[in-house]
Length: 334
Ligand code: ADP
Ligand code: TRP
Image (cartoon, rainbow, N blue to C red):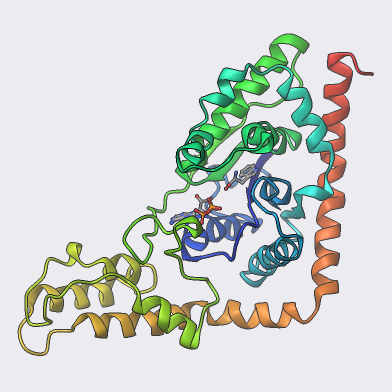
């Protein structure tokens, strides 16, 4: 059995980068016949979860956090995550991971966590760190190891955290015997989605577009995509036009090539930035329309969403409990 696992933090509304960089792969891989799996013939299982314990490292507003957890759940379900095949759950419904995180912390040197890039980044950005932020990789390692995960599909920013999980598993196993399975990162093949300003799209940079934005909200967001003052007639290298990096997410190759050719050629009748923005609005709106409708429908039935999460939690918990018990016994606590 090959096990895949990934988590996403409920720390804001999910944006285009989250969809193309993470959710899309997770949903595709959740299907039993997923061709995306490196070894589709072998049986594989999938765990996807809402990392709400992790969100506590930064959240200070309970109502907002509850709302974001619900949004992540609605988003995955709206895109058709196969919850019969994949185990979809809320991290905090599996408290065993905090026990595993503690056991892992006790075999990990301070230096390992002090070197974590995401922690150092946050320090550099002037964030007042709490202990949770520092030990975040231990909890993430526990998430991964609790389900004997073989592959962890994530963006490149998470690679180091998976290497830390490998180190922690190795340290524990070296001391106490083979308890944990070594996980491997599976880095998302999709290049970074740029934000409205051309930097990586991220909620922490405020340059993102919510997946379900529509109407005025979508128009306003796309209106903020950075352009320059070159007139439509001026021939332009398409690679110098940020809008194309967003249009490529939604247009088929032929249409994208056609727009690029017309922009490169310039002259009278060449499309200006306004045209490209309108096309982006229409294409994104249409692309997300079916999921938006499904989200609307699901949001009217919170009990059903809760039921699906509870079912996922039960399946996840049985597995995590077995791993926790193995680890407790190995280190002498049972
Ligand atoms: P944010 O940067 O908005 O805080 P997260 O770090 O919570 O987003 O990312 C959640 C998931 O979405 C991760 O797997 C990450 O790699 C992916 N992701 C986030 N932003 C982008 C982006 N701009 N392009 C591609 N993938 C992204
Ligand atoms: N740290 C991840 C992020 O910010 C979320 C996460 C928590 C995670 N636990 C995980 C991802 C386990 C993969 C595996 O995106």
